[in-house]
Image (cartoon, rainbow, N blue to C red):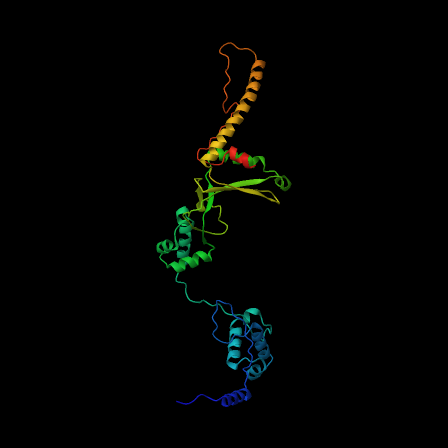
Length: 328
């Protein structure tokens, strides 16, 4: 086997390579192509085509054009022929218009998916709430196209697979109250709303929830078919926070109430009710004396929720008036 090349021979070869004359390729003025157009060779800009026609109209030869602006004779003849087909006649009008030198229409490869199929796919999505939740595989099967084509059409039309907008369920009384609030405050100004503190609470579950996704456009967040009602249930803890126009308020986390805490709360409420009963009974008796006397059975004092008794109605350790008052 031949031995390794010596260091001296390697240095000599490197010197010969560095001294070898280099021939630079001439720089071609090419027009940049759009990303969707394939590059099939040298492309000449509209300015170069206009220069070519201008020199030819002034009587210069094709050889002169090739030596001056580096456009081959064959290409110059093709540029002139296309311009004449588009109405360029220098003997009658020497002006070179843009449509004389612009690119021709490119038909491209025929579409395999027709506009009717594409419209049918979009109709399947926006038809109802069930269509919003269909996977790309199901939509592809119902449309008779591939899954990749389905995803491409959906993304091209602005659809994305996102989580549905959650909206708490409202009964008739709650809807009525919200409508009355909106009508009562419809003429409020920005300065009026700056004095309002907004608060909200949310249930936080530490265990995994079932995920649900659907198809919608960015501006369809409040379409009825993309909204799913969410009903409150048991949670590990509850998070509460508030904010105003230019300030983020405090926040608080409530954990489930233990049996000991509930027993202590009942004792405290019992002591408060003793004090309240004495006070409210005196006020009730005073009001009874001021009323005109009536025949029949005299009213009897009863300490109930209507007469001021404090009662806790939360039975599952939830957040009620008592726990709110203990924090705030």
